[in-house]
Image (cartoon, rainbow, N blue to C red; front, side, top):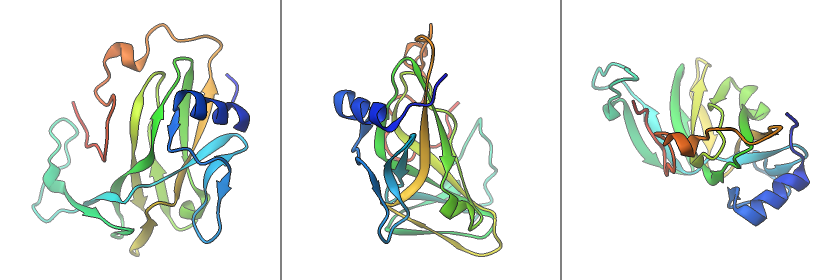
Length: 184
């Protein structure tokens, strides 16, 4: 399963809309870097955030998740409370080819501040905005900057196309737009 290089990512983004909008090359002047890198794509976080709160004493239950656990904000900078988390989404919309699995890793700039980005793999033929979880592991409030780099996606090409894709299974997060909460 090779990791796909910049020229393959560029071709797929332009020919099939695999990443939209697509930034060809790295943008880094005065921002957390984003765009095409040697073997990946650094995606941006949009300005939509769901900030975890326990004002209503809600229980976190993945089988019956309550939207009351979050407050919604649309802003250029999001403050994550100490030892808490925020949900965001990529600015980019992804369309994964049938013979590709995409892995996401956090940016070192955020990791060095105690901010961890978590995303599950993007399966073959999944598409949508990627919901990002930012965990602030520090005892201090932490900032996330909208429209700047948040994480890097690596594209792993299989030896052949899978038998059953995410689209074939009718996956519950298919075509998601905006920040998407857990579904059962």
